[in-house]
Amino acid sequence: MDMNKRHISGTDIRLFLTLDAMLAERSVSRAATRLGLTQSAVSHALQRLRDLYGDPLFVRSSDGMAPTPLALDLAAPLRAGLSELERALNREIRFDPASSQRQFSVATVDHPLLTGMDRVMQRLQSETPGINVRIRPIGAGLAAELGAGSLDTVIAGGEVEQQLALDRGLMRSLIVSEDFVCILRGGHPMAATKRLAMDVFLAQSHLMISTGGRDTGVVDDALGKLGQRRRLALTVPHFVGAPVIVAASDLIATVPRSIGEWGQQQFGLQLLQPPLRLPRAEAFLWWHQRFHNDPAHRWWRKMLLDAYAPLRRRNRIPA
Image (cartoon, rainbow, N blue to C red):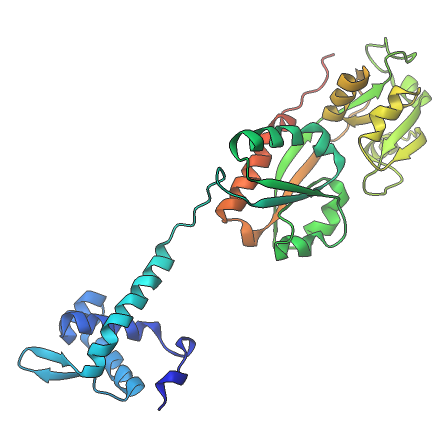
């Protein structure tokens, strides 16, 4: 039989371990002890090897089992091959961020860009100057891209929940959890109010952020449970638009605290506690389980989680 046509996928790898042990021990009993097998199992494997190669491989002699020329010829490449296999099995994959030239990607809305990406880039520039980051908008097909590796991570909240939660190959970790605040311009008639009453809140014209395209939001859901409605004068698709427009109008918006604080720093906006109980503003870091144990990917996820840690400890405005 032409041995050159054989393929490793059709051969039991344990046969090669037996052959290697026999070459080292020149004895069925000692090879069995070396491998932790019975002598019968080694003898059976040796017979399969003889059938495989069409050669006796070992013959009895006064010193034990003497290898044939073919067995001796196989010794060096066999040992080298098994050594490489052992290295592959035991190799620890390392990632050195300080010397890496890798590009990492994240798909997200503009909230994380305004409230945490500066911390990510500050750390990258000081610790890992060769690493690049590509930020992409939220779109369709995110799960497939995460699985294929063409996209590393996603940071988003409810706008992608239905799209990503259906894929069992995806994993996620809470990256943002904060309360909501109401924002209004510094000169707004309500700016001096310490506590925003429900009737005053409902009397205002409201701006809503809808990154996922919904006609209503968490505030409207909460108001609906109370049998109340607000007037939505304007709906915008991006977080950055809310503070900019509120600063130049009498509109009021209910936004995650970090967005409110950004607007306060940039435009002198007033922050007030909403007059109703609202759920936490949460976003998750998503990735595919294929890359869960990859050292580079683990480093990138930790980098993001560390950068956004302050946004997981957001408190309500003191009464």
